[in-house]
Image 1: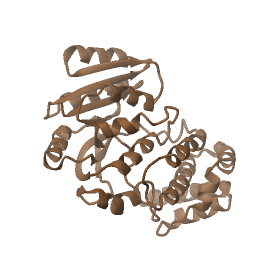
Image 2: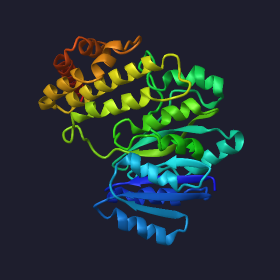
Image 3: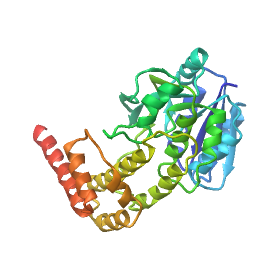
Image 4: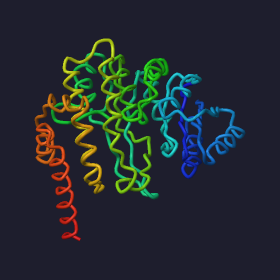
Length: 341
């Protein structure tokens, strides 16, 4: 069996059938589909069982809710395919996703394949989003010189795709590192698996082919923002710093740049959603966590003026001012769009 497709599922009944059907409609059929019902409280459990009755390639795991990491771990433990494909329960494959991976595997048999993806919003397809690297096969030396410097963030704030869902990974490699991810991690969990996979891989194939449709489930900017995102990142810091084996010479610098970027992104998210009530907590959490030191150590070269100013303010511990700067940038952009309209 060539592929194990693993779908972690939690309360996505409105999207799940489309997701499963996108796998069953694949032009390449040598795969198993593992549905991991992570304690869903909606109708997902029944949907999983319904499909398992129809197709012998489908395995279903019903488990107590434990989060995305634990669901993926449960799935990969029973996977039998040579390669693993992760697919989120509200997303979908393009019809030739597995066939595209099969062709590359037949030609060069890489440890990891990274593909492109598209946003899918209210039935509309967005533009294809490609990873940074040129298409082709990268050997160990080329991984070290071209890929490793962009695992977390280079000095220009550029990085590879953090998520694992647009990648095909040899099962032995994915199993080893997926099982090492702490299930408590709920932000940056893909990074904690993918970074050590890249560091251990002997060959990586970068493909421009779009195989994945990422569902944009409406704007969450006006609701559901959690200041605890800052706190959750601390677990990722610990996980990345505990990676064993050979690492890039600038790995610690990349960690600092990544967490500076993530704090900047969370502040920008709060500003975009007008979450003024979150500023006080964000300031406290940033200044009383490991992020304060990571922000201080982070250095960038060619980044936008907006990013440069916001990060300068963050380095000076002026978190509130950074928030309002990002808010006014957002408002100016909105007004300019209004003028054009």
